[in-house]
Length: 113
Length: 113
Image 1 (tube, rainbow over the protein chains, first blue to last red):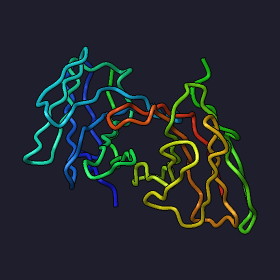
Image 2: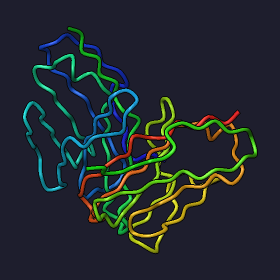
Image 3: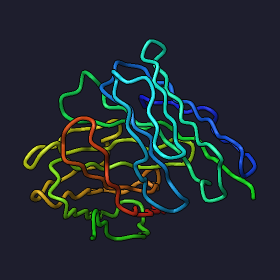
């Protein structure tokens, strides 16, 4: 079964607002990644956070990781219409030595102008 | 810079037909992956190849076979297509180490009638 589960499944906000998406996972991990997918396209890597990190920033993105709760959040600040996309978390299992990367079901973000 | 190239982009099959999805990367990556994406299910790992000469099953391998032809190419074969295999298929690659980001192809939309 899939490792990561995003919440909410869909999020609709106005431009300028912040968007927060959450990801929960089941097993111990080495790291957690967030990806973005525009409609009809492949996924694009956004940011990675390692299991020994608690928070990471990249531009308007802020990612947190709570390994005790097996959860992560992705915050997009000052959202823009161009941020409209699906967002996925993905995890590298700590127990896997072969590099398997599991994705969640994703959050569909819609940003209205 | 081509990155990850998938062919074909679209395909319609009849139940029972066979076909091979092709994937090639030009980034000298060791690891390659095949995912399928279905509405509401996110991305599910079909097969992966941690390095040239090795392949392993992912979450949903039934009905599929793979071949790591060389370091650049990783093909996915449907021997006898079924309607349940209607999906969007993505190939991805990365250097191979845990924690490295995935690079995705643009996907193959497959319909099995």
